Image (cartoon, rainbow, N blue to C red; front, side, top):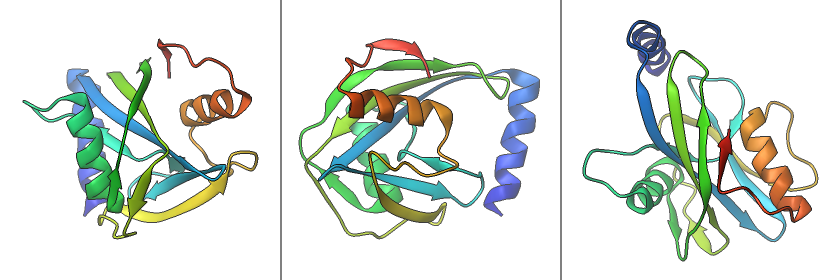
Length: 149
């Protein structure tokens, strides 16, 4: 059912070319990053999702982490805002970093799998924009405050 809804959204995006605003969270502990695989799209992702009307970026990040993987996060650090023009839309994401979190592992129905990966052994199938940000973090490179995802 979720795959069918996603297909409908892709058709909608092709016709109407929407502007989207979302959040992604880089959840890192002990040199490992927590990544998710979704039921309706191939690949590994940092948790995240869309910002709802009347919601701040931080509120959206906390809600998405709680809903997708059951994570409760302490301090969040905003790393930047990034843009992606794929899939017929203008997609804007705020990227947050959290190194102090707990999680129940209770995952949403849209999450097929969640797993920790060492930063020096990121998985095949990691979406390129996510890989770039994680490699920049691992290398100690100042992640730009804005740019292309």
